[in-house]
Length: 312
Image (cartoon, rainbow, N blue to C red; front, side):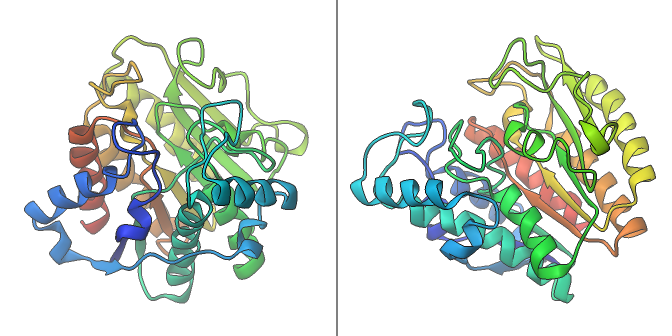
């Protein structure tokens, strides 16, 4: 069974109409999923809200207090300016975190096989600050939740968003139990300007991280597949206990703020192959987040391709 989280409370995470990360992103995907009949082949789960203690699995108390304060105020910035506060941002961010935690619980209890949380994968936030439209880092919260609640040790995080997942990478750069594979646009051309191939982890985690920057303009699927082959070889050696995929649609051709030229076929391929690896190594445990993506048509086509791969 595949479970997808959908509802107004999840769609609410966004920065207003007209913003690249607006609240219409979820329905852009879900309307397309219904038109293609994918919604009839899966379980739809309602949004779940995380409590403060769960947010602090990853984030500092000081930062969560700031998030609560500016959310109540309804103004200000949570970082240096990219991530503005709006009324209720604490609650909407808590729903993002709650859905990924609930999804992991469903997987670990055997209630479902795979999970897709479309509005999630906020991979830029650090433990003590927001960044890049990410008020919280639900991936970090998920990783810590898997450890704390389920005793999971080896976790593989795969990120195919156009932007390097710096908030995950640097917080776990020296952690030997978190294996990271990240395909993204070259940091010389795109925010956050990180994720170079020389960055492979530090200390005991050296060699347990894989950064594969693709040089623009308009890298093609063939470039992605070449990089993906390296990821598969890397993950096959790891044999993780849980897979996480951040399937950002901003690496698809035509995104307004990136410069890549992939098609949804790349994301479909990555998802199918991770399903296979998850079946081989960890009882099928795979949770997928939607990540970025700012062209609504690309979001619809790409996340539907991901969803169809999960179902198949």
